[in-house]
Image (cartoon, rainbow, N blue to C red; front, top):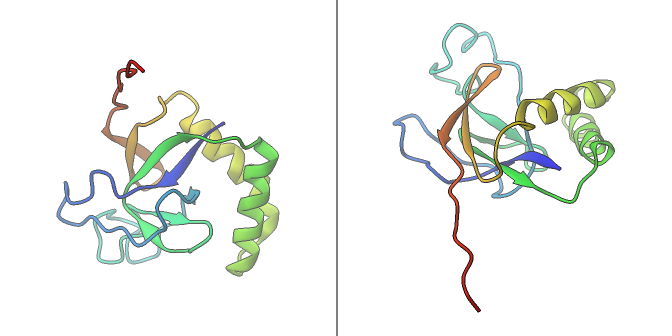
Length: 133
């Protein structure tokens, strides 16, 4: 299943990039705080970053990965993360569905950024030719 995972790829392409999440962990899109609600480039950074489900740490870049997870697995990972961070875990199934729908049509390997609730392509998927063995 295609999911969003934290990545350091393309970090530094923008002057306000940051990557504190764990490389490869599932990420979600948090609501922006009052400080960033009008400007995704605001001082907090929550209007332009993804949040790691395990670390709860942010990154401004994520990558589309194909992982052996079901929709139910993604919802459970999200439910657990929300509960651990003090959010309402009943949102998990709906939020997981929205995240999965958001990336469904993007090729694996695409690196994306975030502008509020939209993802923007920062680097298209790169085709790696098969090596002859």
